[in-house]
Image 1 (tube, rainbow, N blue to C red):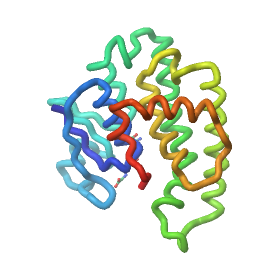
Image 2 (image 1 turned 30 degrees about the vertical axis):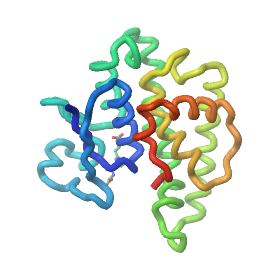
Image 3 (image 1 turned 90 degrees about the vertical axis):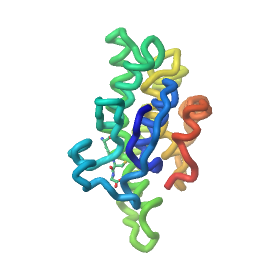
Image 4 (image 1 turned 45 degrees about the vertical axis):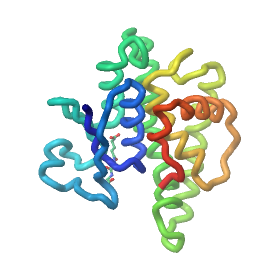
Length: 206
Ligand SMILES: N[C@@H](CCC(=O)N[C@@H](CS)C(=O)NCC(=O)O)C(=O)O
């Protein structure tokens, strides 16, 4: 049985939980981080010296960095399905997995943290507005990409969809006015409707 460390409100934990479900692996998820604390405990720092969530344990294998966890689960348990052996097809998926960590999440974080996790009187309206504008620009890239594809890395569902859709889940449920993006919305509805996505993408976003 796998162990996934981390509260489910974390976008990074969400993709690990979704990936484990997709590849049919039983797992126990342990709440740490946020109000649950525990990240400074020496035993936790041994698992992840960054003191962050998620961490995946699979026997003696211990992995941090959420997209690395998705890749590991896909390679180990999803070969020929959500894992791509062909290097060019895998790179097609990999770039979106790197994009969500390096581009979309940093763009969206100030808006999410400001609107969802900060009391109204303490919000930085300018930072939130700038974050929304940056996120809109990133979502335009996703919208254009999905105009000619059913899934992020081609014709079938795969690890890139698991990595990126939690970002769309968060963006589409933020209380902001946003441009209509029919391709993103169609793709999100399709992938978020998968049985393994349900426990990974709780509502409301918190
Ligand atoms: N790049 C890392 C980022 C990990 C990260 O920032 N985790 C956040 C939650 S989303 C965290 O540990 N925050 C501290 C906490 O929850 O207390 C990954 O993708 O796993």
